[in-house]
Amino acid sequence: MKLSKYFLIAFVITFSVVILFGTGSLTAKDKDKRIPKCDIVIKDGRVMDPLTGYDNCATVGIKNGKIVAITKKKGWSKALSAQADKVVDASGLVVAPGFINTHTHEGMIEESMKVFVRDGITSWIGGNCGSSYYPLSDYFDEMESNGMYNNYGSLTGLNTLRSLEGLDVFTPANSEQLASMVYHLAQDLQNGGFGVSFGSYYGPGCTYEEMLATAQESVSAGGMAASHIRDNLFNADGIGMGDYIVNAEALDEAIQTSRETGIPYIISHLTDVTYGTGTTGYALGVISEAIYGEGLRLAVDVIGSDSFPNNFFTILRYGTVPIPYLLGLSGAQITDFQVTEDVIIDGGVYMEAYEYFSSIDQAQTIMDAILAGETTSPGVLCHIIKPANTLLALAEPFVFIGNDGSVRKNPSTGELEGHPRAAGAFARFLGHWVRDHDLMNLMEALYKTSAAPALWLGLQEKGRLQIGCDADIVVFDPDTIIDTATTTPGNMLSPPEGIYYVLVNGALVVEDGILTDEKPGRVIRRNWSIPGIIYEMPN
Image 1 (cartoon, one colour):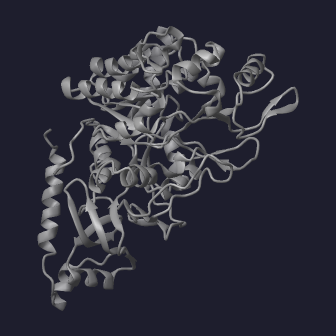
Image 2 (cartoon, helix red, strand yellow):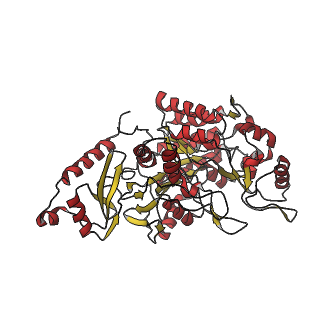
Image 3 (cartoon, helix red, strand yellow):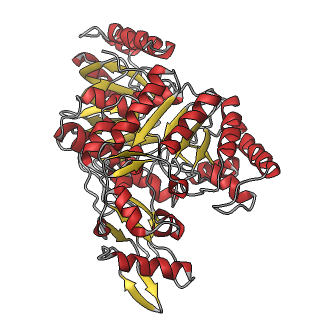
């Protein structure tokens, strides 16, 4: 597929750098004239830029938040280091573009950012799955005034817009309410929002007309859409695939939205909604044909975990579908699920936090208590994602990495926690899936974590290690990088191993694996049209 003009410009710049820094010995006069005085120098690391294929033991110079020098010449490396305010020795480590997380959530925002940046995430998109802050302009101002550990952009959630109109999860919007929702979305788009996110899984009353109207508003302003596709068990119409039913109507609804409006569209956490044998492959085939056969601007994000968190009442479809039927469709056992907080019924603890379910009757008792107003719905962990599905999805060029994570306070213990993927999705991708499962080579993997989403989103100065680009950089050991968080109390947000330095806009936010006091992140207020085009990695 034809590469964009941004790739060509970046390649020329990078090639020029190699020529500019091509001398091995320098006179004092040359040094004064040509060597920039840097704020930070990262020396002697394996510098990898997946957009141009640059892969050399080199030194990177950073000044005023930008990359100002890349050289593999020892003379230049010494000269840059001698004049720098700070030198980072990256010997034996990879120096790569900061990771871009296309799918996540805010939660306790400052705590979430701390966790994300230790996983190498320098830029991320929130407001997913239909839920966001509103208005974005006020939220953006608040975030910047408090300081940020990484860069942040946001979608506007359709369910949030629905809630502004007083709609419950089952009630469709009328024409007046829909017009108001479109108006509020337009305000967010004007103030730098990335687009609209759909969460019809969580709000089954949301209609296709609502999604179509808001998608049209978003694309007219140069924005995008993302979706946690609906579960059509309320009107089951699927294609039998092994031990699960793929709701073809739900997948087609997303694709048809892109087809009718032309909007760039990310189908969210695909393996979280295609659990059974054959279903992920089927969905990938349909999406691939829409991208390469029709030219639709689609992409997918995948989390890379074997489990996902959700709400008990929601995942059991608000008590409207029998539990045995749901388990049969997903190919799961009730023992694959655990609650994340104490369940209180009749004044006593019916289930303790992190206890696994032992029977369907146990789950039904909780559901009956929720419907009767005798208890609140607990969080639940669902250990039902098949690794084979994850490997199949991650291999596709149109699949990005997300963590779908956030940090929250456990209502039972008061401790900060989150699903382990919030703390280690990117380390798990590079360590577990890429290195240990030999999914792809490291350059291809870095393309997926940085350059590919940057190109798709239109982030022209991110996702690259090139002169003039933002100094969003991750320094890690490819032999040891791995996630360490687990679904056990006290370990759910454990930071990954093997990530030693993370720079955001030229400032060290993680140093020797430890979070610093720096908050150099910025709100990314979109003022361009999102390309939404999949580019193959250059050879």
